[in-house]
Length: 304
Ligand SMILES: [Zn+2]
Image 1 (cartoon, rainbow, N blue to C red):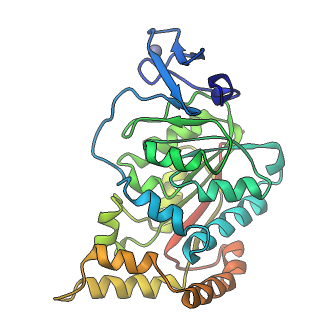
Image 2 (cartoon, helix red, strand yellow):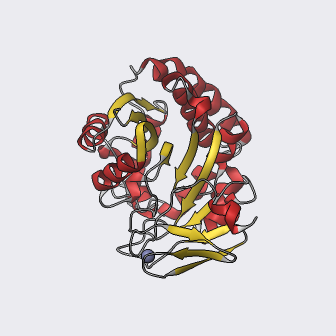
C-alpha cells in the first residue's frame, strides 16, 4: 500500500505543531514545522513521543487475536455494536468509520465484513497494527500514547472500543473527538461497567476505571455530545465477574495472570452456551432497559 493511499481521505495533523501534513514518497511531511513521518508496510508513523504511563500491555495482542473470532465476549460485543449502530444511525451507509485504538482488529474486520465502510484506524502499538493490516485493507496510523490522536476535523463516524478506560483524561479525549467530528457526526464506544467490579484483572489490563452508566452519559454530555443510546450489555457476566472479585480476595487464590488464562481459554461447550445466553439479552440492550451488565455501549452525536 502506498503512502498516498495510506492517508487518502483522512484529515490528519502534525502531532508536533498540529499543522496540516502532506503525504510524500516515503512518508508524510509537515508544512508547518518541517517534521517528517515515515511510512512502512502501509502504516504511517505519526508519533512525536509518548507522554504519561502506558495504557496497555502489547503482549496481550496475539492472545486476543487468536480467540476473538470465537470467544463469547468478543462475539457478543461485536454483535451489540453492529446492532446498536444500525438501530441508532439511519444513514450508516453514508458514513465511514475511523477506529481510535483498533487493538487486535477483530471488531473492525467484523464491521467491515458487515457492510460498514471503514475510513481507517489508529493505535499506539506497532503490534496492533501488524495484526490489523492483515485483517482490513484500510489506512492505518501509528500514534502516540498519552496524546490526542493527530486527527483534524472532518470525520462522520468515530469509534472507541474498550479504549476510554485506558485513558487518564477521558472527558478531554471525548471533547477532542467531538471537535473532529462533523456536525451530526457520530461516536460509538464500549467501556467496562460497574466500578464495584474493578479488580486485579482491570489493573493487569491497565484500566484507569470502570464506568457507571450515569457517569458515562454525564461525561459524554459534558464533552458536548447528545446521547442517542446508552445501555449495559453482558448482564450474565456480572455475577461471574463478582465471583472472580470474591475469589481474588481469598487467601491462596490462583494468580491473576493464571486466572486470565482461564478466562481467555474457555472450552467450546461453555463458549457455545455463553454465546447463546448472551444472545438472549439482545432485545433488552436494544430497548435500553438492561439495569446491569459488565459492559456499556454508547452512541452519541455532535449536535448539528
Ligand atoms: Zn508540524
